[in-house]
Image (tube, rainbow, N blue to C red):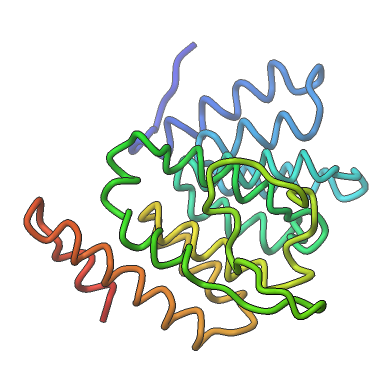
Length: 219
């Protein structure tokens, strides 16, 4: 197989994804083809696959898989395509989804978790009152262990994009965090909360590595 006129990594990725879909596409589900396009960061190809799926009913688990693939691999353009064309987060986002993403992006024994431990501790202190006037944690998904109610829709209590914004900030996927912020219903509150988290991260890693990028984001 000869690949010509490839200008960079994006062209190579797109060529591989296109070839795979052409060879396997007829025997794969639309979701699998889309997942492959997202994995290789091919936003245009993902958009094409989404348009072909206009009558295809996505399950909550499929949506989880597509969002997970894009956020885990930091595919900003793919997230934009998913949000614009396909995914309605209100229909599938649960505490279980957020906890699974949190554990995957920030395993408790990993460096990324240790670098934002102060920010995580700050989030764990955030509480409020539910409809029964009971005090509850506002972000229970930052606890690594599952609990009762993990299958509850997160949007019943708060803005789903706000939660995904926080998850992306903690894992330092700042471009994707900005896409979630644009969709948030509470942009000022979300931005201020994000600044607080970044400031916590800066305070913790100040003596360990260059923090110029975090300082710029905090502004």
